Image (cartoon, rainbow, N blue to C red; front, side, top):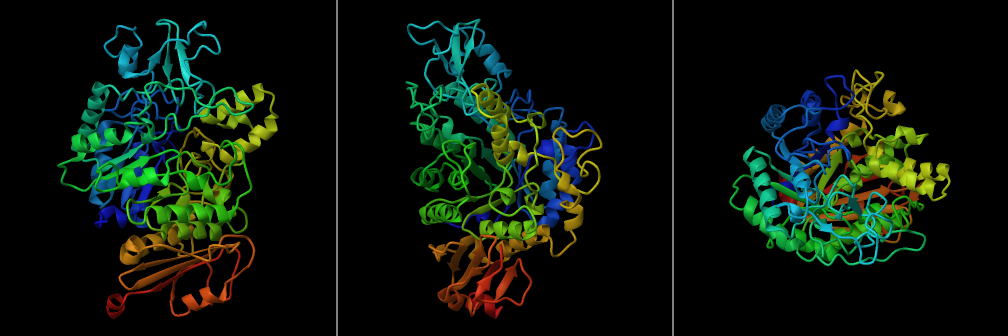
Length: 570
């Protein structure tokens, strides 16, 4: 593929609600982002992805939008956002906005008009359907089909005034837009052009592979013991999704001369479909977020927790590296606003937290793809020690708890699942210092601050060359300075080793090797790997030397680099 600027870039995700609060209301705001631009510049990131700051009732913390052309007062103003964009640009950092167009808020004017009755001009902007034949509207089982919402319960909400149901794949306050309607698509494209004209550098497109549904809305399969069908192929990678994205590219991005970043969150996407989404010749997306590697420790649902198996993780990541090797591009990520903290999930959040956080960062940043850092990940932030349901704010978590307990499940067992998997783990306030609320706010934070903020915070790490923060900075610098990191191919080494995640990147005569002990036990390095790294200097490691080439300590990782002859000559 032709070289693109985003192959050399690192993206930093900001969840404004939890980043920094300047007015003391306990909720982060754009002023808080402006106050910490030095942090981003020192880290060395190239792009900021800003989670939604649009006006919203906040049923799903801003992913339920009432106005796509403004900023919610809780975050500031449109003028504040303009200032932020200008100041980031002045530091050489691009800004990507979250695009949420699978659904709106039920308080959006489009939906309010649509809800006014069957004769509304906007009725077909959403998925309205009557009750099943032979049923009583509003009663259980009368829903137009048997789909379950991603947020528990049915995917249909009955509207008494009009006598019909509307579709919501997520919260009932997030009705799905009907992309079959060309007026909907035109309105969305107009809005996107408006943001591009305001110097936004691209979009992260929320659940974008759900926008096309089969108009027949067929029933799905219901798993044993469950009430509703699990959403899957009925809504994922729908029949017209590639058509819509090609149209979007043509209508919004074609002819824009400055570089943009177009990344799609694609739930349950296959490698074959991801190749289509990111094939440059098709002009749809630049890269996708896929979730396969974050499902290796779960059973039938995200709340069904299985033991972590590094071999499954290694196999999944390698398959995506190989699957998109000749066509397409990977988004590389562990954490985001929808995920628990990776150091608690796949690493060691106890005594070896720093070392395992550095290993996880190494494995992520040295693969082929564009790395994403979620706020606090550069510090090695961990999951929160939740002890009661009252500590949660996430609608998905609360709904799951209430539904599970109502069905007779043990509340403590449900809470244990939430403690490990709730989205609120990634949403606790950013830990800036060791003050009472971690420097996040002078008021009462909207989510509790992790009690480990006295040890894990930016103030302790930014100027410490041995910190997790500094290690991330070194990884970013390596990507910027060594073309093999961005452009090299990928070969998995030692694919059957029970502890090692090792791989090689090659480009233009340069060779980079990563050796990582993905476990809390000492790992022996096979002789062939010892020989392969013997003549490659270590350029970065998470354990101070001298290094024994025959073994790796628990959670130890090393990056070996043999530069190209041209680079060596320089």
